View: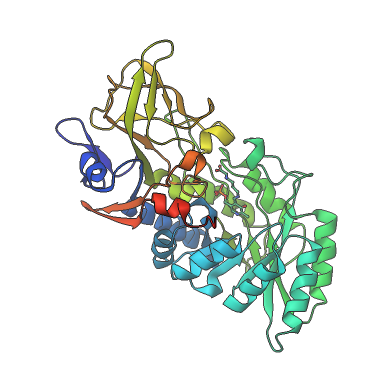
Length: 411
Ligand code: LLP
C-alpha cells in the first residue's frame, strides 16, 4: 500500500513506523492506519471534484470507518459527513463534524433518529420512504420556524457488477424509491411548508469496478427534473489484491462529471459519498501467528479473524497478506482466524515466506468496513486503531478489555 516500505531486514514499515514496534506497543491484532495516506485520499477526492465541478462537496460515507479520529481527520480535510444512524450521528458530532455538512441516510430511520438529526441541525436528511416524510412533517410541526432540507433517494433500477449483498440500485432493492414513487415523493415535498426539497440522491452499490453504473445513475436522476442538489452516492471499488484494477479517483470523477455536464443543470451542487475507496487502502491489519498446521493445505492461524474482519465471510472479499517482518513469497498457505467456524478465513490461498508461530502477519487494505463490522464473536476483544504518520504513532481507539465484555451484563 502507499506509505509502506521495507527496512534493511525486509520488515514492513508503515508511515515511518516499524511493524515490530507497533506490535510491541499496541499488541495484536491491531488496525494500523496511515493517517497521511487517509488525508491524501481525502484531498485527492475534494480537490479532484472541485476542479471539475466547483459547486460540489465530498461527503464521507462514514459507515466505512466510524470512529471519532476518522471523523475528525476527514472533517479537518474539509469533507462533509454521511451518517446512517443515530449512532453514527453521535460519533460524527463528537468527532467535530459540522452539522450543516451532515447528510442523514437510512431505509428505516426511527422518529427518534429523525428528531436527533433535525435537532443537531443536519444539513440534509435523505427521504427513503413516505413514512420519512410523514415523520419529518410531524417533527417540524413541533419546531415552529424551523425548515429542514431534504433529498429524495431514487432507485434507478441499475444493477452494477458487484456482490449481491452490496448492490442497492436495482428494482427490488429495499433502498429508496423507484422512479414513479420518487416522482410522487418529489411532488409531495414540493407542496410541503416545512420540508425544503433540495434535490435527489442515488447510490447504486459498493465495490464497483467500472464507471458505467455511475454514468447510468447520473442519467437516471437527471430525468427527474431540475434541482439544486444531486447527491450521486459512493461505490467506487478499492484495490484489495494485485489483480484488482478499480478506476482511479480521477477516472471515476472524470466519468461522473462528464455525465453530469450536459445532463444536470450547470448551477446545481453535486455531492458524492465515497466510503470504501476513502479509507480502505490506508488500513493494514496486524496479527500474530498462533500456530501453523502443516498439511494440505497448510493452515496459518492468527490471533484475530472474523471478529475484526468480516469481509471474507460476508462478501468473499480477497486480501493479500505477508509475514510482516519477512516480506516475500513462499508456498501458498491458508491464512485463518481463531474463531469457531470454518468460514473464518482471512485469505484462502496466500504465499507466505516461512511462517512460524510468533510471526507478525500484515493484511493490507483493511481500512474500510472492518472496524465498522467488528464484533465480539467468541468473546473477542475488538482491536485498537492506531494512527501512524511520519514515524509517530498513537492509539485513537483502545483495545477492548475483558471488563468491556462484562460491562453490559446485568446478572
Ligand atoms: N452512500 C450510501 C447511501 C451508502 O449506502 C453507501 C454504502 C455509501 C454511500 C458508500 O459506499 P462505498 O463508497 O463505501 O462503496 N458492509 C459492506 C459495504 C456496504 C456498503 C453500504 N453502503 C462491506 O463491508 O463491504
